[in-house]
Length: 240
Image 1 (cartoon, rainbow, N blue to C red):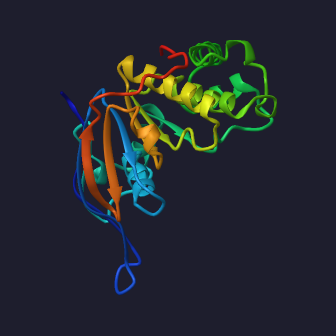
Image 2: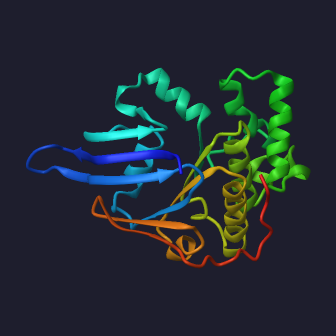
């Protein structure tokens, strides 16, 4: 398998000195292209810091991070911005939708930043919303949709430009169990279509439905294993 992510002896230290906090403490980690991975940990474990590192939103205090063979610490701010915009689709717990925009306009926003023309933007946004089962709700604003539907819009926004990596931070954290199953079904469909999906969660039930689990505690990788059996999602798995 081709290596997508390689972390070698990565540390992230806040307040260096007597009261320092090691959010990441000598982390070594490889993730291959096309994997479906859950990074699991309690609040304060370091999983959010690790997510920010993987998403090029933050840089290590020490150690090396390679993304597709490129040394992240050697990249310029513009190069890091290009990676975040073109190679990684971010999905957040809080949806981060613009309240006064409808679904299709919300999905189009990142495409504007990529310089994609209006006609092509509308086509890509519509296709992405169809993939997550919201073809009939393109003109609805967030306030007119359920939490699960809003998260689907957020997923459509993340996948509209076809990024090879999906980074999802607690994507089911604000959802009921039915909506959570639906969202996991969509993420599994993205993985099955060839994307690398990295899911950040504190929920062991969620982790059991992912192929590979990486457990983090006190800034260290405590376990890294494959799930022998995944619970099949009873909801519809959306192909992407």
